[in-house]
Length: 523
Image (cartoon, rainbow, N blue to C red):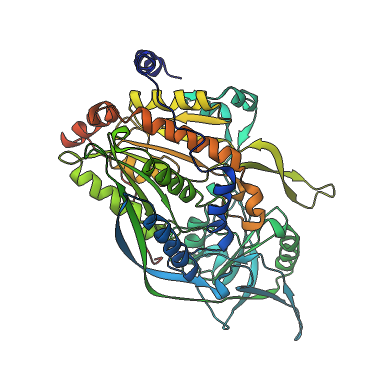
């Protein structure tokens, strides 16, 4: 913890405790069984790709649930995009791969799934020599032209002490991680690898996992929503060995990805619960996903909407807006981008007070373990909760309320941080990423807090409902409710804190960091 943050925080915490600290009534928030039921309509629906029939059905179900909440005012938004959908709305089974041997014989391999947004060949497979390019080598025209490239799945590994160094607060149980590294597959650079292979003249790409096929079946990433110009697929460790052997012999393969794509729209829902004032706090999550983890923040937003609607108006100073965005799995058209930009344009003369983003909640930790025969890894639950980030911008009052709630609810494996990555003092904000949908609002200098985690089960549907500890999810929601109550009587200026200085600096000409626009179609 930086000394400046500690000193500032020490002046806020007594002020918070001097008032009557408000707590959400845990007996009136959705029970564990109710949260399981809500999530059965979300994660239990299978792949809910952006603008797919399953996502549309979920949105319609949410719309009906929100219409049944007294006092809530509903409005809607729509997003235009190019829908990409695997055959049967199922990544597993939408790709096929055959190795061709000398003569006329071939051998079909079990593919874990097509790589999202790669080129649809629909029965007209690419046929080319297999080429394995190790991670230590770049994909270039020298080695990849007219080849189907084989690439190991690799991802970042960050020592926990580096994360601890920028943490404002972490729960005591995080200390046991001091000698370990944080390494999760959501940091893999699939998007860059596909674009590099395309630029190098490759005709296809196959990503090879070092974990068993079953664990990565129907894995959904990349999610940039960039539609690529070559087909791609995932395979598990079992098939990876076969492919590497085939490549060493100069064998050819056929790769086919089947599905459909075309212009479409996706709906978003904004449910407003008026308060005593027009100062507004937005609580948001996204409705597209593919696992029980990915978009379970939706269950939290719905549960909080029901809870606060049951409370008397006199208990609610701020207006609450529960926002169900779309296109996070089609990130190039993510609805959070447009909403964040709109809020930024009206913030100085408007009523927006805070954005609270909820994602990937209640996750159980899953880590790889080596197989006895050294042929790859298996994934297994550790019995711990997944390390979770509670990102909060430069607002000491908001930070104090969050830390107080974490301690009161005795949350586990939680780190309060100003963002992810290294700070850059030459731009605003200093920390650019909140790790999820909260990032857009933070980069647009809207006061933001966000809960997010990145477990192995984030994009891997194999783990199903078991990936979620619903009691843990509920405790995290109780803490969110506590924070909402304890900032309710604060002014916009108190909640904004250092964001106001950021906005002044930007207005005076200091560069602001904005994520580069993501193309919907690859170059």
